[in-house]
Length: 348
Image: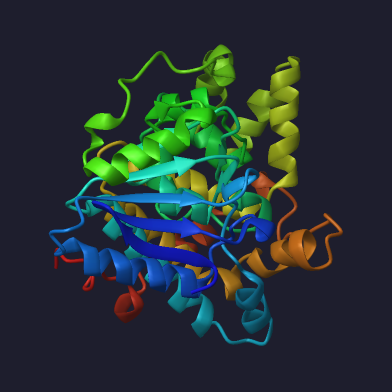
């Protein structure tokens, strides 16, 4: 299809996102095409590994293409969004569980759906321009596409900080947080891809070097103290009592994002811990996203950020202190017959 170039080349299966003008936003059709290719290549002996990359300098993939999801949701039809999420999450699981090496090249913005596509694979390469984030709480959603799995395993309380604020990580912080593996200067990428294609061996990847500067490391003590608090309201209170510029900037980000989404994100990360599987995370995320258009701030968040672009969302709650435990529990309750399953992912 026009938005993604899928082919076999040498010893590799190649997936290249080609929507550079749209920051390679991932559509439902792109997800289905990529997933079909992964299924085909799984038993193809001529394919030794997979290379996933994208055209353009600005973004590997800046998120999901949610325009149709918004339109159908506004009309009261939630089936399209739920089907998109379910199939995308199954693709995320397939990428993580794939029996052949997958190498992703993550330049520029890597957000939301881009994290789901590029950050669960076996070998994740970043460069000078990489900016990785899970900014879903800013549009009334929770970090999804398996993002909560990565966040829950980040050191200390870094994952809670990243999930609630949506802060961006450069290459050094992305490696430290577990969203990437290897820093390779962008000027070396073409030669590295050619070697992977020619040999079909990940041995051609360079040995890991000390990662680039990780700015968030300097704030780890503050992050652990603040985001280790029991509730979102307690986190905000702790930050308000700290006069440092970083603490005040962080508090401002929390006041900007959707309170319900942040409260649910915090609960999800605390439930998962460091031992849960990616599938556990995806099932929990789907419970929120399945309900999100009807019972959360998702459609309003999209309106404010993407449709009207007024940047003034009218959230359902005034702040983190207004969210009850019952509301969070309702958003994350099991879905019964609608619970996410992985019957097409090869392990069930």
